[in-house]
Structures are given as structure tokens and as C-alpha cells.
Length: 347
Image 1: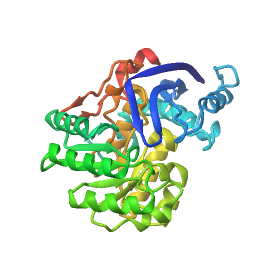
Image 2: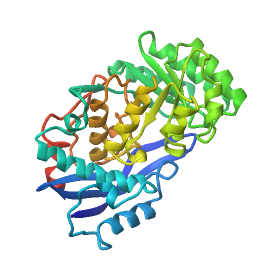
Image 3: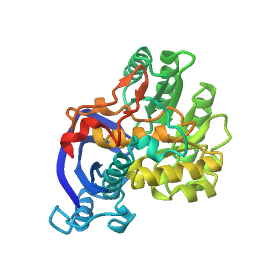
């Protein structure tokens, strides 16, 4: 049986990116019964990364029999929702995996892992588009809070302004902090080369999506300049296999919401690892259900870098209490069966 209910969560303050401002997260809490257990998932579409809200709702409605409730048992989420609506698929697959992990008496991370999952995952702080002074202040605050990785959103300003922000972040962070810059595909080739070279000189860990998502060759061409290149939108747009085939990345950024669920994300991350490409798991500024699911995914994978999961603070309200708050730059993985016992009321 599949059920779903709509929700809307306002951000505590808008997040500025090169792709536009994110002010609200709308989606659906999804419930699936499997093996005598009821799992919970979240489908929170974000156009540009996933299908539209209306398409997500239509896909969930079709999976549930057209009325918000389906009466037949589900054995595999692929049977109901295809890959054209990844957020809807994520909601159903996460709920299904939650139920299956409960039935196995394992945490979702242990159910997903090939071996023993991590007990906690390092996470990065995110500094949105801001002035040089505000960028430095936010970076300094993140380091003081215990984060060992900080990501800057760039690409929304002129190159000279972003260059100044990169320098300010390095000065504020000091040594020993992994800095990242995320351009969301906004740079042309000369700008990408210039700012990638600067990031290398400043000791940044990687530059994310310097060229547009569809330009795999362009992202491949700016590799090897002294700093790793990560891709995010390219993974959702072109796919992991095409990204790997094009040698377009040193790091793939995997968003379970955009990739269609936790099982799918683990499969893709392991394919990347086999090619020597690292994985970072991130959210799409999701509610606590999807955010916790992404934490379990990260814990199930081996040797992930600091992940982009510390996004709960960007929401003015949430779907439930957070079972895995950030503590000095890390998130502890809930150890009980399934996703987390604190989600029982949502089930």
C-alpha cells in the first residue's frame, strides 16, 4: 500500500545559487507497507534537479491508484514509478527501503551497506552567495562550530567578486579546513580556468560544476589544473555512466532525491568508486526524512568525503524532530531499525 500527503516547508532565509534563489521546499510524505512493516519516505521535487511538483504528484497518484491511497502490496518501487520522476521514485523507494530494513532488524545504512556502515559521517557547511565580508564571517563561524569542510556558492557574481570571496574564505578558514567552491555550471571556459587556477593556488579541495551540466567535455577539459573537479547537475542530467565515460569528474555529487532513491544512489556511487572517482552525498535542502535517508546512504558507502547533509538549519520548520543533528561537523547515524524511530508518528 502506498499513501502520500503534501507538505510545504519555508526556508529560514533564501539560499542564493547561480541557478536562482531557493525559498521553499514543497513535497510529499510517502508511506509504504512491505513485509508487514510501514516505511516512510519523502518526495520533494526541485525543478532543475528533478521533475516538477505537479509531475511528482501525478507519479505518486498513479502509483497509489489515483486517489492518494493504493491497496495492493508493493514489492519493488521500480514496478510503480519510472526514472523520469526521480523525486517521486525517491519517496517510494526510501519508504520501501525503510520497511525492508525494519523487517531485517537493521538500520537503513546497515541494510544498504556491503560491509559495516560508518557510525557517523563528516559534513560540510554551506556558505551561500554573499558579500566578501559576509562570506568571510560565515566561513569563520562554520570553522568555529567544528566543520572541517566548507562549501561556497559562487557563479552568481562577477568573476572578480567571486575571486575576492575565495580569497576571503581561505583567509577566514585558515589551514586544515577543506574548502569547496560550487559554481552550479555558471562559468564560461575562460572564467572557469581562471577561478579554478585561483582555487588551486588557495588550496581548495575541489571546484564543483564549473561548466554547465550538459558540457561533460568542458568539465573534463578543466580537470588536472591542481584542484579536483566535482560534478553535481551533470550526474542528474547526463547520468553517472556518461559522466564517468567522459572523464568529467574527480568527484561525483550524488543527491538521492535527484537520482531516484537510496538504493539507486548506492549503486551509482559504487560504480564511480570502481573507476577511482570519489562520492559526496548531498541533499536538495530536503525535509528531515529525506535528509536522514541521505545520511544512511553516506554511511553505507566507504571513504566518502565530507557530505552536504547539514541543511536542516536552513528550514524554518520541519516534518519531525531531527534524529541526527550536526555536532562539531559530523552527524551520527541512527542505529535503530530502518530510518529512525523518531519517525514513527509519520508512519
